[in-house]
Length: 311
Image (cartoon, rainbow, N blue to C red; front, side, top):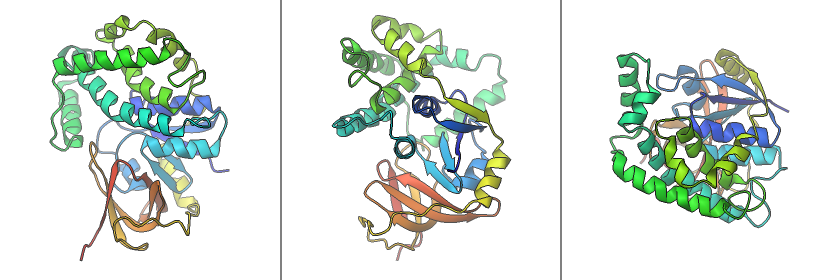
C-alpha cells in the first residue's frame, strides 16, 4: 500500500489536526517539512497552485484541505472511527464550524500585538514583515477581526466547547471524533502562546480534554525530504477515480480544463483536467515537469469550480 506523506510545518494548527488523527489511527507516515510562507515550489509542483497546509500525498495522488484528508484517512484505516455510526452529520457540522469560525477567531486573538510579539520573538524584522504580507495575501484583501472582538467571541466559543466536555470525555461522547480534532487544533495553538493562554483558564474543564487529545500523539512518523516526495510522485501512477458517479452542478463536462480555487483564505488557483466530480470531491489530472502526472483532489465544500476557458 502506498505510503502516507504529509507536507506540513510544526506550528501549523491544521497540520496538528492531521498529525493527531494519524496518531489516533496508529498510521505510519512520512513527514515533509515545508515553508510556512510562499514561495513553496515543491508543494506547488504537486498541487498546481494550492498552498495551504497541510497536504497529504499518496503516491501520485495529492489531497488538499483537511476535510478531505480526514475522509481519506478514514477510508485508509476505518477503526477507530472519526465518524462513529450515527454521528456523521453532527461531526461534520461541528468540524466545519471549528475549521472556519473558531479557527479564524482564535488566530485573530492569538496574533494580537502581544501574541505576535511572542510568536516572532528573536526573528528578523524582514521575516515578520514577510509573514504578515503572506497572510494578508492569503486573505485576499479581507480584513481580520479586531483583537477585542476576537477575544470576546473566543471566550464565548470556549464556553460552548467546555459545556460539551463538562459531562463527557469528548465533544460528541465517550470517544474522540472528528469534532474533537477540529475543535482542538485552534486551542492547541493558543495553549502554546503563554502570554495569551490564560484565556483558557476561565473554562477549566477544557484542560483535561486537551490533555487527553495531546496524549494521542502523532503515531509512527519518519522524516522525509521534499525532493524525495516529488520523485515518489514522478515514479508513481495515480490511483483510479470513481466512475459512474459524476455529479454535474456546473454544466462542465468531464475532460474539461477547469480551475479550482478556495472560497476564502489561500486563493491560489489550481488548473487541470476534470476527471471526477463525486458528491463530495473534485479530482483534476495535471502534469508537472518534476512531479509528472498527478491527480489533485479537493473537497466540494469550501472550493469553487469553473471552466478554465469559459465559452
